Each structure stands twice: as structure tokens, then as C-alpha cells.
Image (cartoon, rainbow, N blue to C red):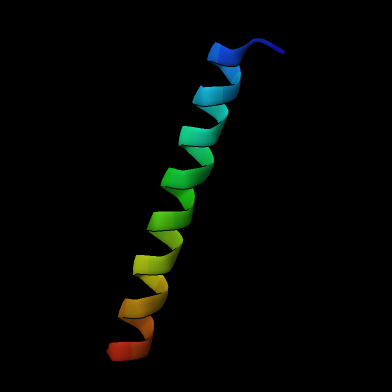
Length: 30
């Protein structure tokens, strides 16, 4: 696995984590 593909995978995971956390916060607040 190259460093380039690994960084892309990390970016996707990080992006999904942010989306999930914001959605979870919206569910808790609303």
C-alpha cells in the first residue's frame, strides 16, 4: 500500500467520522 492511497483512505475515514459526529450532535440537540 502506497503512502498516497493510505492518506486518501485516512481522509475518507476522517470525513466520515466528522459527518457521523455532527449528525449525532444534531440528533442529541434536536
